[in-house]
Length: 326
Image (cartoon, rainbow, N blue to C red; front, side):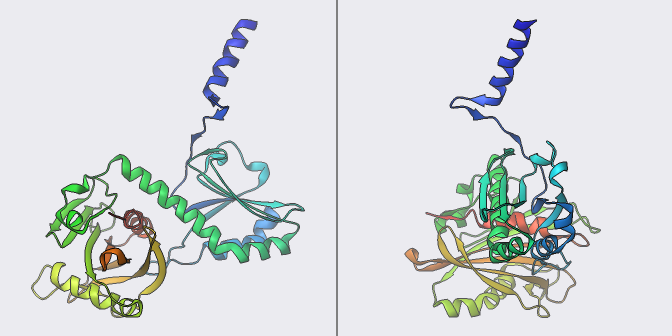
């Protein structure tokens, strides 16, 4: 019996450790853009929870339906079971004398991001969270971008086959589910047909092209005009005179961004087809490629009638942020 027990223990140790006493962690679970908050019920139903829900529940701009930037769920520390610990994104609310924020990777599973928020009392927890809420949100979002890109790498298209990417001297992580609509050498349009929505004819789309370099203010002011020109030239509707434009009734939001280590503008808004009822959200990255005296534009747009679109647009964001200029 002792030999059996020892043998079982040895197998268990082999399963849990690999050289240098490193644990083999199980695979994490959970949807993209979702955070598990570990907090006492009194904290979650009180002001601490309210601040977290308000911050993470801020609506993502540019989407037709109201959707939060991050979805949240809560579990009390006593209910933080083995299954819960496998969540990919976790925010731990801890009361303690030492105050601060710590980010740890792959604590209970992998890939996983765990953010510890620790303070002496509720008032200090709220203050600490509010001072760092944008960084905390960005930490979880960046982790999900990396996770999504790693999934796409496993079934990646050979981007050396695209004339436009080769001519522009750049690469993207593009999953195989995308098909070529147009590849002129100067302009690339890829499409992934979706099966969601009433029409059952939705799609996720990627556009890639370059523009002449200009001053930052000029670039900022011309993003909408440039994408309208591209839409008129390359993205037609089903009748003559119809083409994609930026929705006139909705002003896009533009933010500073960094893509491939380079300054960029991130623009979120809504597109529509002139003279038609087709519409949806878009995400545009205009990247300053100063070494080559040009701008690189990678844009994603989604057509998915009647369904939420946050997840679709997030996939396009992950693809755009995989940009590497050679």
